[in-house]
Every structure is written in structure tokens, then in C-alpha cells.
Length: 524
Image 1 (tube, rainbow, N blue to C red):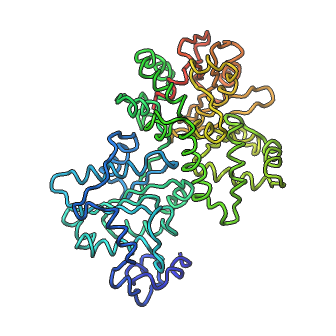
Image 2 (cartoon, rainbow, N blue to C red):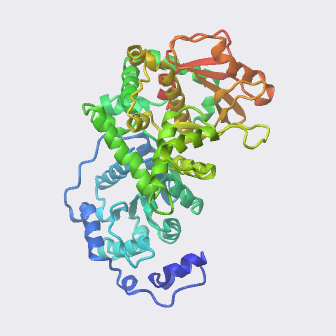
Image 3 (cartoon, rainbow, N blue to C red):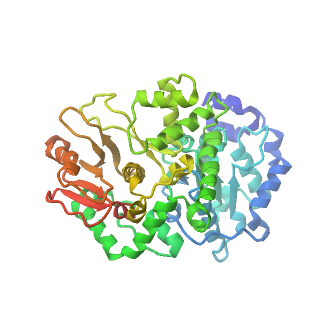
């Protein structure tokens, strides 16, 4: 904290410097006294907040993702002064901010000056201001709101501050902490660089409520494409349902009851994945969608969020890591495989520690999800992390290889069946990793025990889950890992789940519940 105060120096007035400790500044800067901003910054803020001057604002997309409702609930409940919406790039976080702002501005009698939105991805630099959040807040009080932020709150007219891509601001977390500690404001923060958002969140305990959102869910694809409003089988706080076999048995029944809609959504997901871009423009050729995903998601993350080219990070190594992760999606490649693949493509020797560090950074940005092995006997280093690509559309765009994830598509391309099985496993892993109330692992093969694709820990129970994405299921061979896990009393597994291609699978072992891939993806 002392390091921070020394660095911000003359940019802080005494009242704010006091928030950070005893090393207060004797005199505020001229900018802090006058509450001014550089002309380009002021112009930018006025142009991007057109409601202040009753100018037309951009149209707002009508479709509401589930994250919109989650942020609204947390904002209204006021359990914390700030709500953080965390997720990968291009999944609709900025749109959700725009929708919430639109709702506020449509309220009868609502003063539009109470809303400030700042998109830090595009904001001109605030040179000389080590505390840009406060520089903007001070200017906003004087130039727009016309009264102190706390004065507005006393009049029950709280200001709403929307900060988009806030992680791009140096030392954003302590600034946000000080802001919400000393001003009665309501804040919504979004961030695509998940590792910087997560790091800042650690110092904001008790001051932020977090919503984590990934690509489109299957039912959201149906809503976006065809206006279908389908409730989820698993509510936001309903992880307890996952611990009952009857809940899993009911998933296939849901598909049978609405087979036409769910089938169309599953086909659309198979063809385009879960990024909104592919479904907002369904007539756009796939290669155009793929180019856009590569440019605005993968390369943007590598160059911007991970800072490749700076901080000593190698952009080419990141790109090659993404390629290997895509090729081995749904698998747990070991050290020799990683180093061998990278050695052939990068052309120089790569240290294993660096590979591990870079993989963790990719996981933090949600390009991939790394699933740790389950080590119940406290043995470290037993098994490698399983690679699950966040969305199979990213894999298809990066490798230029489209693999269908629906029965009709595989009937047309039967030679892709084995590869589709691995991609289905990757898809299931990424989907389950987004359920915050559970812990997800995979169970590597070990002496006397076959592997299990995933193990969900929900409360005191462990639920083994195996993915067999194929037309024909062998009731004995394809359930071997599940039965072994269930037979081991120490694992405390009440039942297992077998993820299949179709809903008509029947098994003699009543402990194992067959669930189709589309039924699983429809549950949230």
C-alpha cells in the first residue's frame, strides 16, 4: 500500500490520500483542485454518454442473456456496492451494460445525468493522473451531476457508474475499493481479462458481487435465433439438484417434450458454437465468422489481455499453445507431448515451467479451461490437467476444421466420429466448469482403476461423469470407469452420469443415468 501512495504522489488530494494510509499528500494537483480532464477525455465522455444532452443513443439489442438478469438482481439487492460481470471477450458483457442503462433511462422521472459509462478499452489516456477513476469521478460530480455523489445519495438519487473493461486501468482495484468505500454509488464493472479481474477481486472482498458468464447456452441460442423463452432446469442457486439422480433422469424427458426446438438449437450450436456473433448473423458464411473469432477473441486476448510482445511474453508461443490445446481438446496431454509439439512448431527449446505458466494465463482469460486431476490421496503431480476449449467454435476457427456435434452432421461425416467424441468431452468440461457451485476434476487412470472423464463434487457427494458421444453404447465397456468409481465406497458417489449422443439409451445398472449431450447443455 505504501508503494501505491508514493507512486500516485501529487495526483491525490489530501482526503483521498488519507484513504491509503498515513503518507498523505500535502497539496492536491491543479487538476484535482479544478476537477478538470484533458479535452480529448472530456469530449470522449460526453460523446459516449449522449443521454446527458438528450441526444439519441445507439439502439439496444432486445435479447437478454441470463447474465443480464443476474446483474440486475445483484444490483437491486445491494448486497455489495459493485457488481462485477466477468467473462471472455465477445460474449455480450458490454451489451448487458447498455441494456441496464437503457432500463434506467426509461424509468419515469429518472435524471439521465445520474448515469456515467466509461469504456476503458477506448478511453484516451489520462496522462499525469495516477488515479483516473477519481479524476473522472471528480469531474463527473462538477461538470455533469452538479452535486457531490454522496449528496445525490442523500436525496435518494444515487449515481450509477458503469466501467467497461476496467482491468485496463493500472491499480484499478484499490481505486474502486476507495471509491465505493467513500461514495454511495452503484457500480457495474465488466472485464474480459479474467485473471486481472480475479486478482483485483481478492482485494475487494465484501465490496463486489460477481457474475461469471460464458458463451451462449443452448436455450439462449433458441431465444436469440427463434424467440423461444425456455426456463432452465437448473436454477442459479440450485446446485443441490445435481446431487439427485432424479434431476439427471428428467433432463432427457425435457428434450423429448420439446424435441423440435431443442433439436434446432443443438444443430445451430453444432454448426456455429456459442459465440453470439455466429447467431446474430446466421446467414454469414462460416469462414467470415471464423476470421472474426480469430481476430476479436483469440488474437485480441493474446495481444491485449496477455500483453504479448511486452512483459517478456512470446506471442508466437501463445498462438502455438492455443493450437496444441485445440488439437488435444478433451484430453490430458503430458509434459513430453506438450514440449514435443511446441518444439516442432516454435523451433526452439521451450521450458516446461514456461508452458505451464502460459497455459495458466490462457485459462485465466477463459480461452481454455484446465481441469485438474482428482487426487484424493493427497499425492501431488499425479496426472496432468485436461484441456477443455471454452467453445468448440474457437477450435474450429483456429484450426480451420469444422467437426459436427449433432447426429445428423456426423451421419454425413462418419469419419469424424472419434474426433467429435473428444470435442464433445471438451464441450462438457467447459460447460460444467462454468457452474460455480461445484468443483470439477478428471480422474486419470491409475493402478487397478480406469479413468473417468469428469468428477463433479457437489457438497459431500462426488458424481462421476463419462462422455460417450456415439450412436451405439456398449453397456459394459462404456460404463467400466463409472462402475469402478461407484464401487469404491471411499469416493462417496451415489450415482454416475453417462453423456451420450441420443436420449434412447437404456442401461441395466440403475446407478448410472444416461443423459444426451443436448439434454445436458439445455439444463442451464
